[in-house]
Length: 171
Image: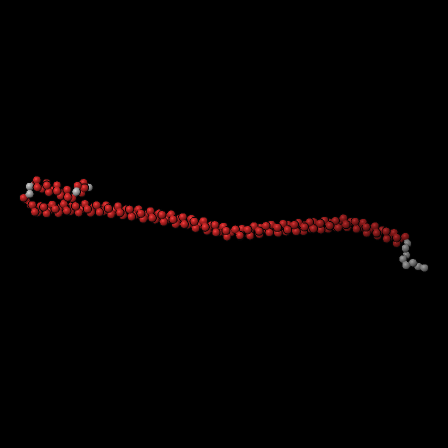
């Protein structure tokens, strides 16, 4: 009877030699190919994990920034109201200051106008007195003419001076 498989020494030797060759080839390929591929996959896995961790951290930071900006946005209207209130206060103070200055200026102008009016009034009084003296002297000169002696003339001048006042002649 013939065997299905012809197991002879040569076949066995070739099978063992093939198995040893495949084992060494596997070890060689494992060293040359599998280890670098495993290392590359390990690095890639670490990089992906780092990217995931970084993304989580960035998301947390973004959430914190968002909360901070939302708080700032809530406070913006309060700050704007404070700024506007401060501006209104400064404007009111400035308005009061301008009004006070205007009142002071108006009072000074009115006082100066009163002073000038008094001076003008005094000046007019003096001029009227001078004109009255001149008119009285002309009238007296025409009435009395040559008949008046120096004693009568001195008496008339003294009387006129008393009526007009000594202040007119002293100014």
